[in-house]
Image (cartoon, rainbow, N blue to C red; front, top):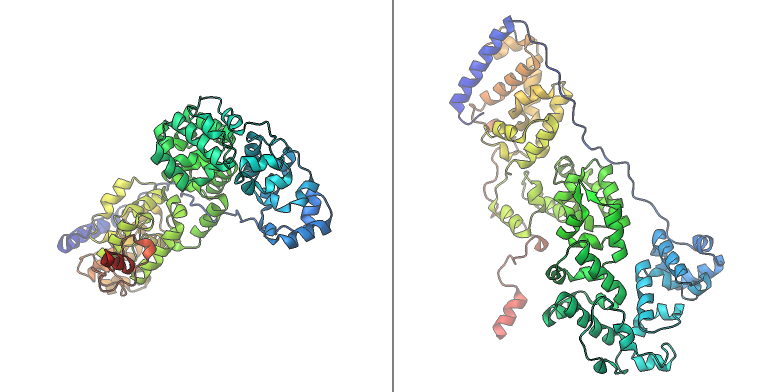
Length: 559
C-alpha cells in the first residue's frame, strides 16, 4: 500500500474524492458481519493439589494401624512424595501377586516401585525358576539377579534340580534360539549375565541385530536386561504384526523393546484415532509415544481439548504426547501468562510452544535483551543453529506467517489474500504479532467492525497512540477546518471512511513512505546486533562461541 510515497498520496487523494462523492448518495446498509471467532479462553482446568502421603491415609486405604504406618514413614520419608494414584496402582498389583498388607508393611518401600516394574520383576524371577517369590526377595530384586546361580540354589531360592538356562530358553516359544546350551550351563554365572546372553541370542535371531547393535542397546537402554522374556517376546510380536514395524525400524528404536505390550494394546483400542488418523500410523511415525501409558495419553488429549486446541494441532507436534499430562497442563496454563505466547493460541502449531516451552522462554528473554520485538513461533521453537543465525544476523523481522494465520482465524479470510494485502506495506514484517493483536482489540473496542478494519488492514501495523490521536482529532468540533480535508462533511463519514482518513493523516506526516509505523522508541529498527550481543546462552547454541573450548585446546596441545 505504501510502496511508493508519491503513488500513495495520489491513491489516497482519489480515495478521499470517492468518499466525498459517496456522501451525496444514500449509504448502503452495512453487510451482516460474520460471527466472531471464539478464541480459547484460559482453561478452568486446575493442577490437582494433592497432599503428601500420611499415616492416616495409608491406614485407611491399605489397612494396618496408624502407628505402624507412621513408623514406616519416619523410617522411609521418601514415601511421602509418592502420588496417591501410583500408590493404589502398586498396591493393586501386589494384591494380584498374592501379597498381603502385612507383607507390604514388612517392606514398605516396595510400594515405591511402579506397578509395571513390580509385575515385571516378579515374572522375571518366576522365569528364572524361583518357586516362592517372597516380598523380601522381590524388594531385593537387583541384588538377587546379580547373584550366581549356585549361590541362589545354595540358599534355596531356586531348586537344585532346575536347569536355569533351559528354563529361561523355553520362555521363547515363537522362535528357536541357535546357541550352545553347554556354555550356559555354568552355574557360576549370575542371573543377569545368563539372561543377557539369552536376550542377545533372541534379538540376533528375531531382529537380525549384530554385535554393534547389541552393544549400543545395552549401553543406551540397559534396563531392557530386566524385562521379562515372555513380555519381551509379546512386545516384539505386537509391534511387528499390529503396527507393522520392520526389524530395521525396531533396531533403530530399540527402546521400544521395553514397551508394555498390554499398554500398547490399550492405546490401540481406547485411542483408535487422533483427528481421523489411525493411531497405528501415529505410533509408527513417533514410536516414543508408545512408551507413554494409555491413561497419560488420554489425560493429555483432555487437557489439549480443554484449552480449545484442535486435534489437528496435535498432529503438527506429536512430540507433545511424549510429555507427562501434568507437564502439558502446566505449560498450557503458562501460555496464558505470557502475552507473546498467548497471541499464538489460535496458531495450528501452538503445541510446539508447549513441547519446547523451556527453550522458548529462554529465547524470548534473550531476544528481549537485544530489543528484538519480532519473535515468531518458528524462531522460538526451531533448532539451535537456526536460532543462533537469526540472533546474530540482527534482522528484527519475521516472514509474516504468524500474522496472516492469526488474522485469518479472526477475520475468516484466506491467508494468501491477507498476505497479498499486507505485503503492499514495505515494513509489515517488522511489526510483532502482539502489536497487531493489541491494535485490533483497540479498534474493536472503538466499535469498528471486522470488515471495516479489513478494508483498512494496514492500520493494524501502526502505533495505537497515533491512531488514538487522529481519532480524537476527527471527533473535535473544528476538525473540518483544522485538517482541511477534501470532504464535504467529515462528521458524516462512515466507520470505514474514518479509518481510511486516519491512515491518510498518519502517513501524510511521513510523506507516505510507510515510516509511520515506527514508534519513537523504534524509529530505526536495528540492522545488526553484532556489537550488542550479550553472552549467548550455551544451551541455545551447540557451537562454542569463542572457538575451541579450553579443555579441547589443552588436549590438542598434548597431541
